[in-house]
Image (cartoon, rainbow, N blue to C red; front, side):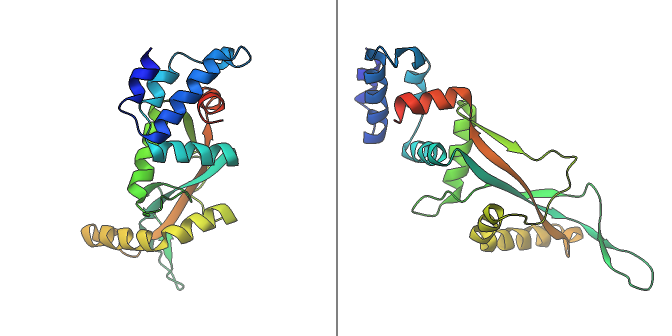
Length: 193
């Protein structure tokens, strides 16, 4: 049926997903996990989407960080120090993870995350807004920061040139995790065993 027709135009990784789906639909033990949406979902994934899902399957959760630039102002008095202006944070880079393709093109990873969210296979949980924007807290987020340090510095520098009021502002990260949804968990059990 539709699975075989889709394989005509699909790449090898996508064909493998269709083959796993077809095999699971014929297996009485797995048939109950097969969802009718899986045929359409497999056809909307590329090889990077599948690699991301495999990585997430193996890790269970993946750290994610957004980078913000916060304005500061001089506080009066003898010490005259810089103080962050509340609610001045501007997101300059979003959804940074330690997952990178071989070519290092992180824009492709951001597109993958967007696609997997759209298909409701993953969820991104960021810390609540009531929690302060954090400085680097743990090894996971420190590794993400180190991986993106040059990109962050370049992006912040360009942003400060365009918006001088952020000159001298501080870089902050908001942190969170990426996890599979219930549908995503079923999908990888069937299509990415």
